[in-house]
Image 1 (tube, rainbow, N blue to C red):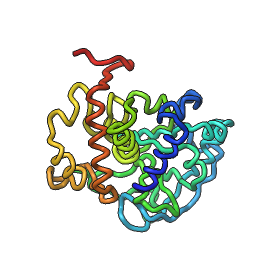
Image 2 (cartoon, rainbow, N blue to C red):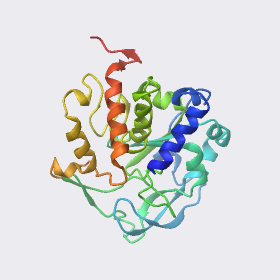
Image 3 (spheres, rainbow, N blue to C red):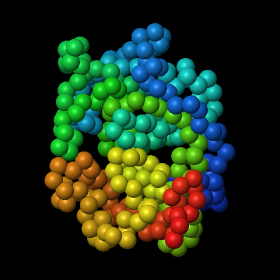
Image 4 (cartoon, one colour):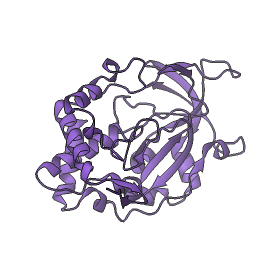
Length: 282
């Protein structure tokens, strides 16, 4: 995955454009899909049964749910054209988790918005699991990916899913993209890609990202109160810092990836935006 991130970055540089500029022509977002309304019994979308190598339960699981791609195409007739322009698909969970992924990739996959575990009785459709100190279930919906390795961070598996939205790249990431270029700035741009794929679903930078975990740039940048080596160790294994933490470990990230992530976080200290994309007051 690290090599894939680097190739994406190099390709953008070879075109002579920045990350945000490369997607500036993507269309504006559509109104979000409220899944509890869109997937009502009269939606016309037939449920499917699938088996997946489950990311949450860490074992093969069988689910019943609705095909994601069919829902998207029924809702937005021009969704494939929108995807070709670099749009992002944003998922919103009830707990504040808000990951996103490339819309074109989502349309090509066979994701299912699961509403029950087929090993459970209809009246009790979800197996509880431990998240931090609490026992929860994936209800009301859980996005699962048949045939996809759960370690592939470019595919998202949000549970407690309630809403889906399409946004342009600029709408989704604009305030969080580093502006520097060249030298250390290259590391910051690579670090943004690492952050986007692995961290942004839970954390935010300049209030762009998820609400499940702490904001990392405003009003204080995380590198202003955490030592770099502690940040490195936390990313590798958060459980060595906090018992029953909700933050996962990231064994897929190498030392170079984490170094780039630190470059990115440090670079954003000079690019703080607190509200409505205005610089923070001194």
